Image (cartoon, rainbow, N blue to C red; front, side, top):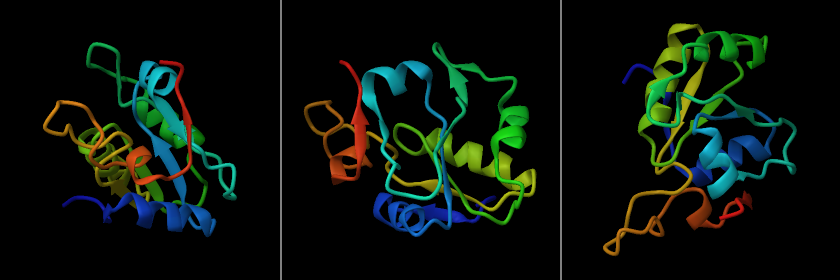
Length: 137
């Protein structure tokens, strides 16, 4: 593992609720709009929204620049990376670690893994009942 570690959604929320971390949602704008976003208004830190890729899987060439501009000045403040299911967040956490940030990946992501019916209702941030602002679709 090339980053600080993996956290369950509940562990991530605990760090956010205590004000000791910043959430970085690396999903696409379409996912934010149609699936929803984590609701962190009850925490001290607003989330950062920096796509790892754009719709169609095109890598975001400005990811590093955006993270350096938006991320905390104190690079020891933990960054908690969140994507749909946990894969993009792990890659983003590794890049952030290489930039000197303390980075974690949130296991299961926002939506979690598909269940037997193909729907993402098994686990993940929203399915574990953590605060969300759900999308329009």
